[in-house]
Structures are given as C-alpha cells and as structure tokens.
Image (cartoon, rainbow, N blue to C red; front, side, top):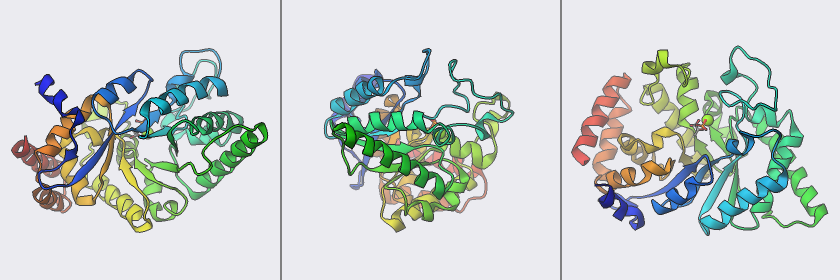
Length: 325
Ligand code: PEP
Ligand code: MG
C-alpha cells in the first residue's frame, strides 16, 4: 500500500471531475525537504524557522540563516518556498533568550510580538530571507498577525532590511511577496482589511482552532474539546477565504486540517486550491483527492456549513470520506 501510494508522487492532485489542488509541504527542519520532494510536494507552503534558534547558545547570525534559506530555495527550484519569520514564544522557549515567565504564554510575548519589540533580531532574519530570494522563489510570511498596524510595522522593518542590503550591494528580489498567517480570531474578523495589506493569506488552523474555541492546543485534559470541525471554525474559514477572494489575493491552508482528508469537501466548497501539510500526509491526501468527485463533495460541504454541531459535521464528513476511499 505504501508502494502504491508512492506511485502517486508524480501524479497531479486532481479530483475525478477535474478540480486541481496544489499540495505543498510544511517543514520544521531542513531534512524534511527530501521527504517532501520525494512525495511530490509542489513547493514549501510553510517553512517553520524556529529550529534555527533552538538547541544552541546564541541567536543564529544572518549568514547562518542565509545559508539554510538559500539551500532550501535552490533545492525547491521554481517552486515557491514560504519562509515564516520566527514564531518563538508560546510553547517554544530558548535557553539563551530569557523570556519572562508568563501565566498565559499562548496569549503572551511570542512570534511577531517579539519581532516588533526586538527589531534587530527581526531585521537580521528578514535580511537572511531577502538574500535567499536571489536564489529561488522565496516568499515571506508573518505569524500571529492580529492587526493592520503589525503588518505595517513589520513591512517597515522589511524596508529597512532592504535599504541595508542596498547599501551593502547585496542582491535580493525587490518584488518578494509578503503574506500573513491567519491564525488569530481578530485577523479573521478584519480579514477584508488585512487583505489590502498582504500579498497572500495562509490559514493556520492549529492556532486558529485553539484561539476560537479557547482550548489550549497542548492541554491533554481538554484535548477532547479541540474541534477543527466546530461550526465556529468553519465560519471563520469561510470569512477568511471570502475576504481573500474578494481582494484577489491567494489563500492557502497550512494547519493540520490541510492534512486531514475529511476536510477536502470543505476546501472544494470554499474554493481553496492550495494546501500545505506535513510531508507524510501528501500522498494520502492526494489519493483521496483523486477518488473524490468535486461536485458531490461540494454538496456535502454546503450541507455541513448548515449543521449546528461539530459532531454532526464530523459524522457527515466521515461518511462521505468512507464513500471516497
Ligand atoms: C498553525 O498554527 O496552524 C500553524 C500552521 O503554525 P504552527 O503549528 O507552527 O503554530
Ligand atoms: Mg501557529
């Protein structure tokens, strides 16, 4: 069965009735790139950069980061590599960076909030990403955005990084695309406003589900309450995708839900064609897409959007998935 799935690596991800998906990979380390490419990933939809900061004694230099980003960009060839700026904090702590003890780390000093406070760290990372953009199809993505101001401030630091590279005579892509993660409920509520400031959206369902339902994604005791198919989540997905479509910017999904084949009807109904998932999920999801009739799936999903409980949605999607397997 594993060998059979492997044969799908070079096959397009297309439904029985001709709707194409673009399946990209999430990466949290460099070695995952090989698995991703073996499994036919069309680029890297989410390159988590936290690993560069972990298991060491000081912050990685611009040069160190640049080498890693360039390596990945070159290996991905024409395909795009979306590099997410660091998402430290929350559950990810660093020995050499004494973050304050917090009662609610997931609501605290993390990700873009640190970047906009410790701008020298942010500018160093942005400079490294920019330099890599001269060697491949590189895009920048900011995590945990919750306001228009944060994008504008981040872009201001990006401009400073560009000006600095200009002074040093170092090449980069001046038209590099800059997108944001949609993973905070506030971002969904103002998705129409954010869409005017960002080149693309990527929906991070892991954090979005956590924040919408107020269910800590790390807490075993309430894991049974963590429902990606909760009607509140589905509505947020719809709001986000509609705002992106309205503004004419691309929208993808990069949370774990993208790798859950039961969600395929939802993406078809919403018109999401770009999914990014762990490399191990790529062939399984592609196999299901190949067995799915988009017209039927859309009808199922449309019915799901009218259901009132996560259990009802899950039962309906499970039953449909069964018929497509
Ligand atoms: C997410 O929140 O859905 C996401 C993709 O990012 P991470 O899992 O790294 O928080
Ligand atoms: Mg996240």
